[in-house]
Length: 284
Image (cartoon, rainbow, N blue to C red; front, side, top):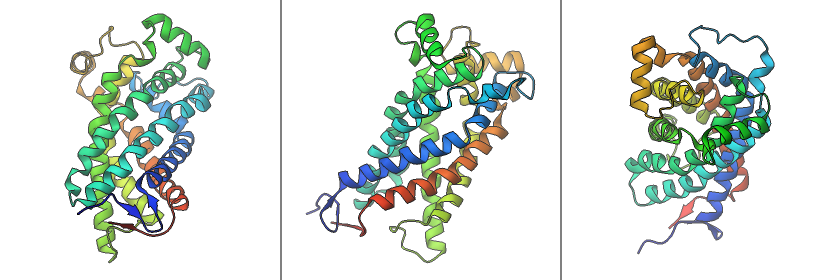
């Protein structure tokens, strides 16, 4: 009979999941902090008809860096890997790797909901709607009620669920091919260098594919959607008033952020997780 996977030496699947979660939270904080300013610039470009996002004071690009990264990156990436890592292991154990992208998309649901407040507050700060983190919290709840910090959550889900599925699916595919190309067992841990390469390619591909949803998300968070939170209504309005190319505004910056961010995130996530996990592979 099949038993719950556990590592040699009595290390449980839950302990491994905690190590992966710690790796995800750490890598998320580092990658998001390093690229915070560039991502903020992308947000300003997305909601501006000018190509540069009209930045007069560069300090606005770094507003809320500390609190929004801690509020968003730690629970989002930590929570995602806490669920995704053991799910992936079980799917591999039962020889159902084709379900990994679907599992990734499902795991993105709670992680995305947790991260909505940080997304809203960051956009309010870097777009100049508020000058302080506390002010952003007060104004968001005052304008939209107690759930003001979750406005547009459906757009975040519409963007992040396919993003997670496609990105993880591509990443795992590239990892598998990378390991096979180098004559390694696909079940072994990939090197940080290999993780960086696979991360960059998958990140850039997903950045382009999900750009329209990201633009719609920015419009809603910036209050430029006429009160609508419907992806279809907002995207139609953007196309009618500004043309279809507006849905890809900031795509170069988004590709840069996700490409470079992935090259930082995946090697760091693997290093931290592996350092916390006892050596040895899963036995059944």
